[in-house]
Image (cartoon, rainbow, N blue to C red):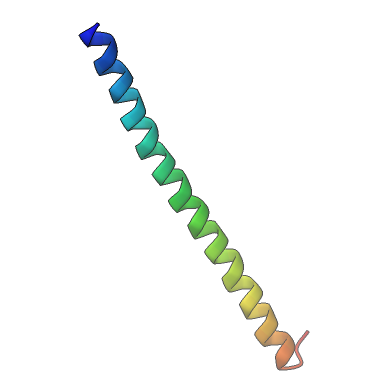
Length: 49
């Protein structure tokens, strides 16, 4: 019983770590898209669009 509980606890902990990495990666992707949109908006503002 102790072994099963330990494995279950380890699995929950590991999935939490993987979730954080996934969210961090998604955050970076969204940030890059936002930067591109901002650059395009600046270009259009300057009449280059």
